[in-house]
Length: 233
Image (tube, rainbow, N blue to C red):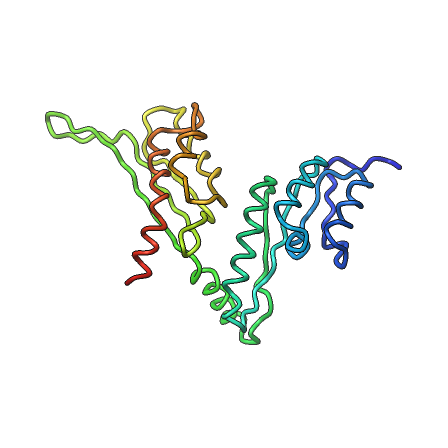
């Protein structure tokens, strides 16, 4: 059999009724190295086990298809959110470039009303943060010179346990090389907030990071405490 093109990716949606085990056997037989994963198959097989099985076979994930939401049933949204977070963690573990989901079963209302409901699905389970960091120098003539200035935005789950997304912007930097450090914040998306200070200190090293941005990112470990304070109001 002719080897498949190295860029070919086969989606688990093509074998809708098959299990992950069946998909894995087919992908191995075909010799493909890029696949799209389906949440319900990962749930049945186990996300961690699936990650290990794919790594053993040198199969990479091109995307992860997460489950949708039943917009008519708000009492099911928390479980659906957790499923989405599991898919995000799996995507991060496999370095998948994208994950997608849908609005799921509609309410039967007008489109703009359905969109508002879908926005509530995510906002109700989301803790958003906005951080501004600046250090500056004041001369004897009381002239201020800004040395570093970063803004960092993102969100975590409502309990402050997992970072969902994060972005940083460098506004003032002392050297040209410093701008490359901004991309280091992408390493945190989908990761647990617990132990963040220690992991950043251990992993965020070298010229592709920045001491000042690292200090800002380490402060995110305080999110659970801030979330608890918000819950008690």
